[in-house]
Image (tube, rainbow, N blue to C red):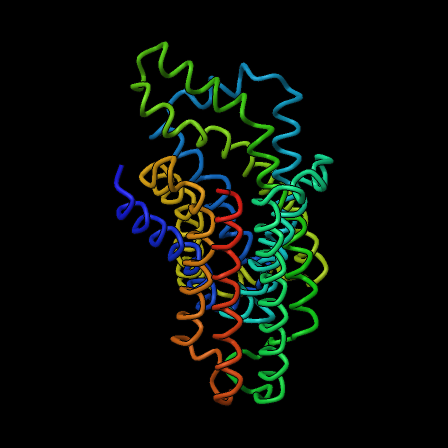
Amino acid sequence: MNPLLGVFLHAIGGFASASFYVPIKFVKKWSWEVAWLAMGLVAWLLTPMVAAAITMPTWFSAIAQTDISVLFLTALFGGMWGFGNVTYGLSMRYLGLGLGVAVALGTCAVFGTLIPPIVGGKFLDVLATPGGQIVMMGVVVGVLGIVVNGIAGVLKERDCSKNDSLPEFNLAKGIIVAVISGILSAGFAFSLSMGEPIAEAARKIAVDTGALAPESADFFKNNATLVVTLWGGFISNFLICGYMILRNKSLGDIYKAGKKMGIANFLLCAVAGVCWYGQFFFYGMGTTQLGKEYDFSSWSLHMSFIIVFAAIWALGLREWKGSGALTKCVLWVGILILVCSAFIIGLGQRA
């Protein structure tokens, strides 16, 4: 184990997550829903199965022998996360990369921390422990960070005209979809928990057949569960984007763009999809390198790197062009507060 390598791997994962939306911004003559669905085809169907085939070759056998109820619940909660993922994408559409990621992930961190103990009926028990109180402090700090970023959004709305670098900027829509995203995204953790029998079956088959060494099987076993989780996520994304395509009559965008531009658009979406999946690949490796003593900080590191890299991308893409110094200062203060919130929550989970 190498904690410094673990931090570096988390940084790569955070960069991949913060960067996946960048190629989509360069897609031309395709509506948002067409580009998002094309990205999802690679991110949630093709890449997970290819990655599982390479790292956990027994994934299909494990799924085949898993009880149907386990598969259903794993896919169901994956679908719940999938609906949240669509709204996550919409939050970046309406708020931009920097503000959208900050508000969406800040909300996700708050609800992702609160929902599991509330649903499990353990909220008061958690609140009675020193660690639980630290976690709640982190949640309060997270809410403060979301509010500060919301203020930055209001200031940006006042500063910038409709002809700026983010023509679809809409603070009200962006905040609403970001909050919805935060609530529904908790389904991802539930899905992985429900799909644990899939991971264990894949590990056992791999070890028993000699397909993988025990250490490698433990390291990659969750890739088998991810396939089913993301199947559910793809279905919900397909339903929402399919509805938007029918409502907006945007399927014709594929033909209107022409062959050359269509291929270029799909390649951009494919790169976005691989980047999206890459966050989990590097997140898993980073967690193992941190070791048990520091693994509590994995999610905090991941969230923090995503928020920071997304803010850097936003500046590079000039999303805040035309904004005043005060607006940018408020944005960075809000981002710093969210990073602190993530680390406080991590410390509380360790206590």
